[in-house]
Image (cartoon, rainbow, N blue to C red):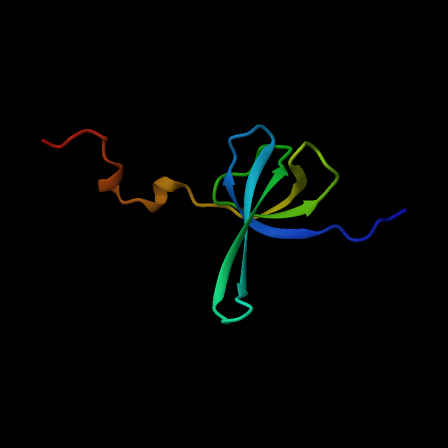
Length: 102
């Protein structure tokens, strides 16, 4: 017997330090009820990542599932977009050798 369609969300991985678990931030932009100004709301979800594939900055698709632990109610359905490695984004002067120049 089916219990209806599972909820889905798209968010960005903010932490992958736990084993088989990632923390995902889902950003929602809504307008203020009285003033109409756009407000950014961020919800955080813990999701099950069976293969430990997700990296920080990845854009992922999560699906609601049965409770897997006290706080984990979601699982990673698909990685939509990979985050680029940090070394590719920084200029060579910033990476350097880490020592003092002097």
